Amino acid sequence: MSAVNATRTVLLGIETSCDETAASVVARRPDGSFEVVSSVVSSQIDLHARYGGVVPEVASRAHIERINPVVAEAMREAGLQLGEVDAVAATVGPGLVGSLLVGVSAAKALSLVWGVPFVGVNHLEAHLFAPLLEDPGVAFPLLVLLVSGGHTMLLGMDRPGGYRLLGRTVDDAAGEAFDKVARYLGLGYPGGPVIDRLALEGNPTAIAFPRSMLHDGLDFSFSGLKTSVVNHVRRHPDVAAADVAASFQEAVVDVLVHKARLAAAQLGAAGMSLAGGVAANTRLRARWLAAGEADGRRAHLPSLAYCTDNAAMVAAAGLWRLAEQGPSALDCGVDPNLSLTPAV
Ligand code: KG4
Ligand code: ZN
Image 1 (tube, rainbow, N blue to C red):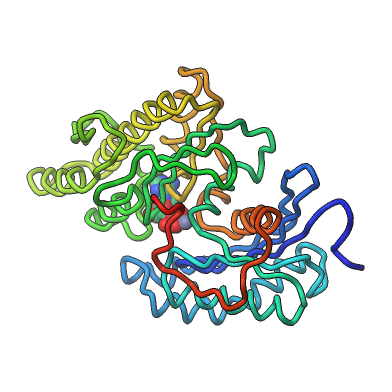
Image 2: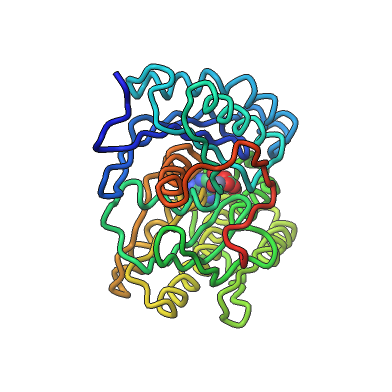
């Protein structure tokens, strides 16, 4: 039985840009909506935790060991025999060069062996497809706050493929701030989920950490906040870690939500969506919904599994690119510094 039929296109997506080895089968229906048929993520967190961050050499070796079993599992979960897809996509950047090469090489090999097209996908664009995976009714223009370990951006999305950069961090990414503060507090890696959990037991108003508004433009800065946390804990060694976590998180979320609302108003956005790993944050998600309600905009919250790195979002972006622009050349390389648009 072939997966190719008149009603939908089925694509295998592969994601290996950082420390998750992931594969997913997604179908695109004729109306442009998506169906996630399978999604497998093998996290390397345990391997990197003892180093307090991702070690590139360890990451690429682990991807090499895991890529074939992860792809096989994604195909099995989808009920497909090897080769029963219409195309294969992989993240070509941005990310760690050794990690990217593993996924891209695997995808190109499968494309050759199976005789189906290969599509190179931008990891940042893939994150923007997370809200579209689950909600075919997303209205444009959409304001997207993309917050991950490497990026913090406010983007205006006029349609898939049409992006405008409205604001970005001038120093640390939001996820990086969570990771650095957690490491300083001795909470382990990655810091976001630990601070999120610990903050539930703390008082978000216990410590008045600074909110860096950079004169109310749409750019962000988080390095001063990180320094304030370090200085506060040095001066008050007995402070409750839960209060530090809750107060730090509140300071980050205040700035993110404040600037997103400004950007959405400036854009005349019909809706607003979160994307990226930090979009899994419980407090940010609650404040996002409240902001949408207060401003009369539809607030989109992708499922947690589609916020942090995964291959379903890569497959969706690949399906869209394939339909709009056709396949990528098999001699295309990886680009660790790939940007979303020429301006980003
Ligand atoms: O998108 P992602 O999985 O990988 C990158 O492309 O960077 O994002 C990872 C980042 C890490 O910095 C992690 O600490 C953060 O997302 N993160 C969170 C939460 N879950 C993951 N930050 C805050 N709260 C969370 N619940
Ligand atoms: Zn990511």
